[in-house]
Length: 511
Image (cartoon, rainbow, N blue to C red; front, side, top):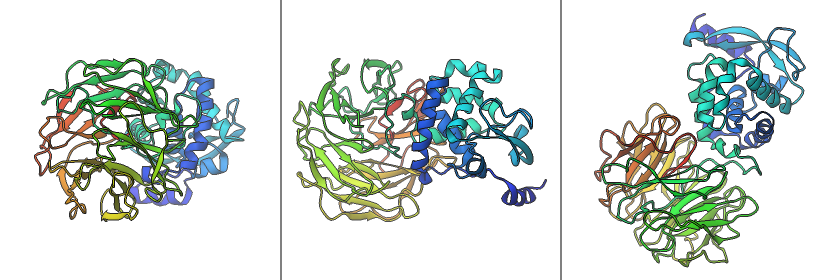
């Protein structure tokens, strides 16, 4: 069947909507509903919740496909035969679909399972993966979601890129946070509020990785100026459990970056472990007991300019409040103060940086989507300026990943956006102290490709921020492109070949 004819046939008949999943269009209500069923599936069968949710997003197009809406089949599960729906499904229905044997896609028909509820669809997904001998080899990898989906992909789907697509959905929507069980945090798109990562205090940014989960280890690889030390050292063995949000910053003002973790949820505790220069203090200390509730987005910055990093939290949504707790050097001020009452509304992406170069960190928010606006509220030392100003009107579109750094070394924070995907472009707009100048310029054309995780830091200590990208997964490479002040060095250089494996959370990086 020719491609045009196939497309027309699909538009007319196909009950499963086959579209590229756009993270910017993520249906948070669907993720929340699916997460409950996926965690129940994990409890019963041990299947990673992140994998189950991501597969359901791909197979059902966020619950909007005909197969999911009409027959409550969210994973594309087929019948063994027209009269063999299995022990959970209520029947079988013949429907048009697309198969890609050998990478050659074509229209066909197949019998799909019909379910009485969404819960039953997720249960049968778990039962199928644990009782079908075709997936038995993958069982040892259920604690590594990326590896697990790669192991089951070939028996599960004919699309040769299926595993990569599932992993992209997991990473773009941070679905790994549902793998540890417990109360469900509301979904969020990005956390980009991390601060300094110079853990040794030598003037060069280092990298850390948080295993989270039950192990909660923290590993650090320090920068030599041309690479990260070959063997990552464990700097803490009991920090940032399960789905906590780890961030970095110099909270006591001694010139060495420390680590903080936000429990969020109803507890909303903040724990800090200070750096000794060769490790983080063994006993993490609670620095705040009522900060960054539920799905709020925490961030780190020196908002009053006293040399000690403070913490902020963005409520987003309809309220769009910003609260700050200042550092005393041994804790965060007990009374959290509202520093802005209308900033980073709904699903906008907030960030922190000293955009006007006055020594106090300010806040920015990226609307993304089709507008691509960037708004800034500068710090007065006791609040953020009430009138939010648009500093750029065409930057970080759709699902691009924005970050902040001083890329030309003029002491004013600039902005960068990573397109990722096949293009892997990185665009920068420099700050002149009152706005981000002109159209974003392409500073690199092949960096942070696919689903890699980008970050920013001054890794060679020359005063200009560079960029890093983590492949994570099985490869676990870290590549760096250093800043020249007007671009990033042409080829990203591998600075580490075994760091931030699987679903670990690296820093500096977007979460």
